[in-house]
Length: 351
Image 1 (tube, rainbow, N blue to C red):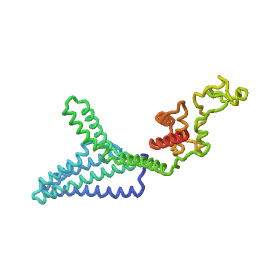
Image 2: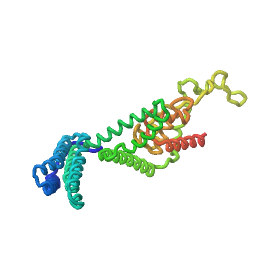
Image 3: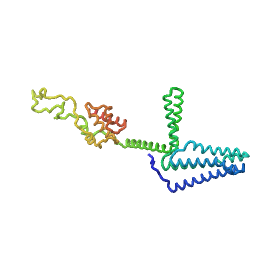
Image 4: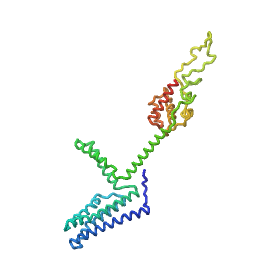
């Protein structure tokens, strides 16, 4: 995210901005002098000329100062101020063209007041950019976006709930038009969107590199499956395990060793030794998988093996994946499915 803390202008920046503001003020003043001279040449009365200058350039200067002041305070300017910055010089231009005695004079008299209009707009834009640079907030962009969002919310509600079909269709089309204007001119929003996309690209590159450099899943070393596969334990006290047959429990009849009836309990189900995730990872020769961290393919097999035999009968793929996600482990769907297939293939080969 962008740093929105207030920044100060450097000495060089302050000098450059001051140097840029000086000609704006100077040429605005020259425009007022030119209008005064033009009107005086026609009416030969200074009072009339001063009145025209005050109504045109003077009023424009007042609005320009209001615009600059509000901008420096971090506030948006009212619509009347923004409209006045162009309307008043336009009125002065029309006045000059009307009092001119020839077509050439009309063109000159009409163009002269526009110097003040451009100067006012330039000073306002410069002040706005200074505020945006120092505070990271653009009041004008926020005002425009707020107005667009307000209209968009109205038309979305109208398109969804208005009883008239025509009104709903009109609002639906208007909503799409307004959607194109959301965020227009908001430099801060654009910078933040770039930050978001940069983060997503970083995550994607990290995942791609992890997939490229991950170690391939290999068959466990000899003796590993003795720990990983369910085993029957001799002499265990769990129900369903055949007790050891001793010499006293057997009889020899005609050269054959037999077991007395009732001395052997049939095995109803295999018993899985109490193997933890840490023990399975140690036997497989991989670091113990941790929830929330990227896992290699070998670690994925270890986790799925541990989850599969947490219950009897063993969990299915869907049940194991659900337990995998609930346990907070990280892995893409394709990698998890590939690890499960490797686990199942090994179990089938062992069987």
